[in-house]
Length: 461
Image 1 (cartoon, helix red, strand yellow):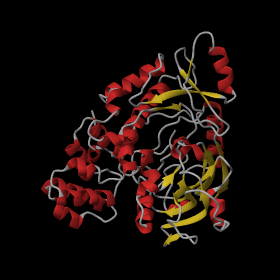
Image 2 (spheres, helix red, strand yellow):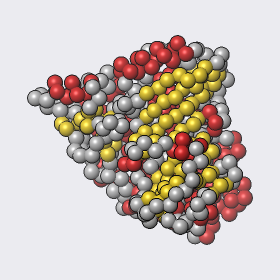
Image 3 (cartoon, one colour):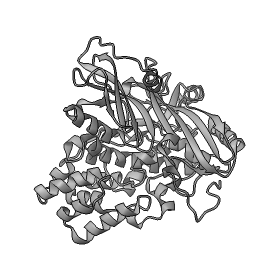
Image 4 (cartoon, helix red, strand yellow):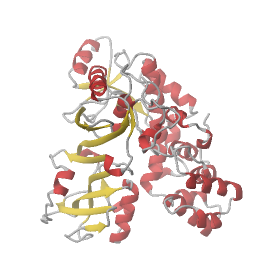
């Protein structure tokens, strides 16, 4: 059913993530992103208009106020949000779960995001850890942040070493404005250099905790460094956690935490999984849902149904920011299909597909059949998302539009071999979903700052 990551060729990685096909016919421009973190800037804007990057760069002083929490901007460089939260919590002497966020930002990036911390846990001058992390308090806040506070994410992304110019980018964008951007879960949802999370999450759902732990520790990816791959192969050969702690690179922090636990408590695989941050445990299982969604969306695109409304489809209301409004979906029927089409075309509603969980309802349409086929391929049933052995990682499911609602993208600079794009996306949508249509790279190596030297033109349509 699944290959090990170590058996994958780079060009097979996207299919492994469930991502197949393009909706645009324009030739890709090729190129790479994330050659360095400064090539990928990302920041949050809240529903009240607060802009994380603008606030940070204007050096707004902390002004107190009322509330049991402190709202702050966390600027980070070259570290993922989950790890950054753990580091900040350790420095402040609090638990990671006491830091609340709106969303997770990429590791290979410079990002500005809002967080809340307990009041009096941080000094008014903030916390600075070199260029890695800087937390700047803004004011007191009444409650912890969650995704409902986030209106949009803004990106400024440099594509380097491209093979075609801005004319092709504009043509692709025009096509996407007409067709829509497939709302795939992006590469970073699964681990951009080692898409291990759905493998581990599926094993957790089956209760195979020893296999889950060993998969996390030893399965290597063709996109990760040679040093990391050697360490994983060596552990697979000798299965000695104590010696592995000496040669596992310090950058593999989560693996090292698991190894430390197994040294202290041999064969306690449940405890080893729980050595990972709670957000990461949940992410493992949620990535199985994301993989099923991606596989179903690829089937829908292949069948030519991305923009076809069918009787039985689920439709959701879209707010002014492009977010799904709370509430049950509307079911498309013969009597309302015309109205649904009209509202969809003006962006008031969107056809959505369930992201599976234990409360899954399946549309009685061709799109629902695609979802069931994807679940059957992974041998997953809805009830399995309520985990028995790691219950805190359970997921109830959600609804996700098939295409990205209310997005924008513009060229803000270009040179002979590079171009800079500014894009605005609703929460939960991935910049790589848009970039892959523009770039059409041969392998996801292009999304981790690496070129494929075997293919001169990485941007064939």
